[in-house]
Image (cartoon, rainbow, N blue to C red):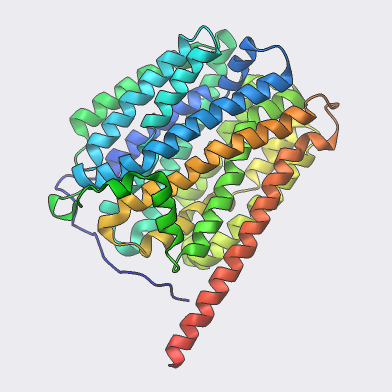
Length: 422
């Protein structure tokens, strides 16, 4: 199988001193801070409302607020990083996230909590810019592994963050936010003094207003016929993941009466599984299956697991399903590697920002959809299978992604064979 690519190697092209380990530490600390608040934020929202349905609705609205700000600002940050370098944008993101955590910790009402979500959405550039940083210092053939390492740092942050946040949340729902703010401050200091720039002056592109239009960024990707099918797959997978993430804590709280500590342990398992696959097994899996088959296998694993999440009748089953879903953690880096290889080196920041814009579109829509579904079923008995409806919707989206990916890869395989015959 061959895909249309522009094989531009970036090996050795980064600024002197640039090293993937630097950005991995930044991503880890950033995700550690975010992971700290995941088990407690939905419960904290419940302190300002009176019913489960209102809790689900307002938490969904907050997720949408964050996603809207991220959608509007992410393409701009990606384009700015292509012009001025990755390092300044990473520092901006770290500072903004620290302010976000503090404003949420101090919030006396829901309105003030929204301020934190707005600031957080405006500054949440770390993952896309970190991916662009990794692309800058990786060879053309090694990008999927580099993305896997970034994903592993992300997962490692979620190994430590949620379980620590759950433990701290037992003492005070506000304490994890203060700790997260301190970590963001430490991350900023580390980045300012030790993280070098990865994008050489010769590879920086001009800043254009057309690059900061979030819809233009998505439409530009949609016009790329060579990867259009993969963009649809990426969008479907992202929407399913966002719905899962935005409803997980409240779902387990409503159905199994889990507290922040129990959710912290479950999210610890998610991070552990992600790290094992993306840091330890990804290279072997890519060599064994290839990026295409690995992506398909990962999508299928995710579809089955979403269904099992919704059908679970006991809390311990959730832990089992997480640990049985290892291949799903390899699908993202495999897809991202295929898409990245089809894009020139000087456009990697714009590409990652555009992909993040798709994720942000999911963050705008899916928390509202997921919270609306969860709110409707929140009054049902805990053992009613319909409480898992949001996960069944996730499974349906994942199934659609499998169908689109299969069709895309099959078409390109046939096209490659025809080219060889000609």
